[in-house]
Image (tube, rainbow, N blue to C red; front, side):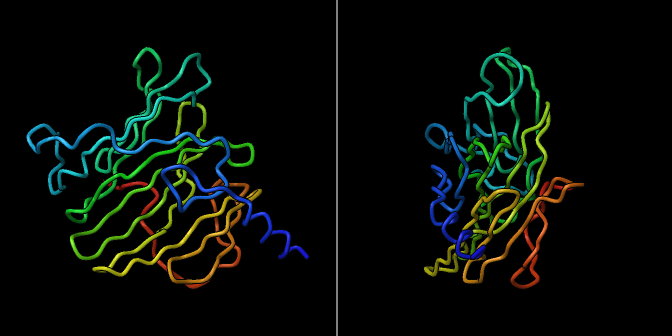
Amino acid sequence: MRTIALCMLVACNAATPDIPWLHGLDHAVSSTGVGVPRAPADYNVEPGCGVAASREVELVVDVARTAGRETIVATYSTGVAVFDHEDHLVMETPGYPCEGSADELDAIAVGDAYGTPMLALAATSGGRRETQTWVSLFHIGNKRLDPVFTAVVETRADDTVTSGAIYLIPEGLLYKRPGGSHALWRIDPASKIYVPVLPDTPHDEPPLVSLR
């Protein structure tokens, strides 16, 4: 009976705008890359990164406890920065290590995960022939973004595309690996991050944050 109820809940979870692999983020507001891609000379390109890794995604939304709306600016290589209505930096996360010419931040979204404010980002890494798209989730705290989950949601090898999904549920999530089975994760009370309860198979995922 519990399995049936869980499946019904997951089936009703709506996809997040611009991040179609993520379901169940309520009241989501999202944004993809802003403007038209500029010339390489117009970007502050990180060493070893392609031009797309510096392409900005911007979102204006109310995410902090202070008055007014905040501006979120994010790139693959430099990470996420949140500025208040007076243009002061209030939250930030590091960027991700560059892996190939396809490295790019695809979209960011802010919404509610069963009472918890959350920021989600989708990014793609890899090169011309093989790429993987992954989604990272951050709990929005008091002047901080805490990374809580990262998983691959789509892989591409030449013309072959394999997709997965993330379904937010009360006190946890259901993760479908591309081409694999579902795995149940729960929020650990001590660390506040998602930990596997019923994993499918052991696997490696992108880091929650860059170590560089």
